[in-house]
Image (tube, rainbow, N blue to C red; front, side):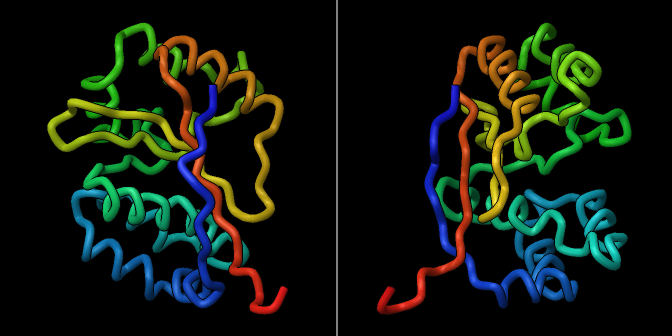
Length: 170
């Protein structure tokens, strides 16, 4: 059901730079095939306590691109407002899986689909990836939905976890 892609360290300065608008803008320019105009608009419109909410998802998408050359759709690929993302989703999955992803809300407590839909540029390979920061955990409704999704696609949901570096000498 779940397959760990790894646990990666990040530095608090990265998250600070993301919150300040500096890092996500750099990433958006450096990886235009990963981050689209709607991702940029969401990042730009996050103000106050929500700023930096999607830092780990952006960081995971960058790491996956740098490591494997795979593109990622960040969240919201299940919603009609994200037509480009839904087109890619429709190309990758069966009609049954597309329906599960776009209509699952009430059946699973309103949880969203995995954070990233990761795929090869030529669409020859793809997977879903859930991203967890240092204090994030999979909740029961997520587990139930991800179990159903994993069964429907016949693949594991991958998980990337992030942690702060361990202080030297610890």
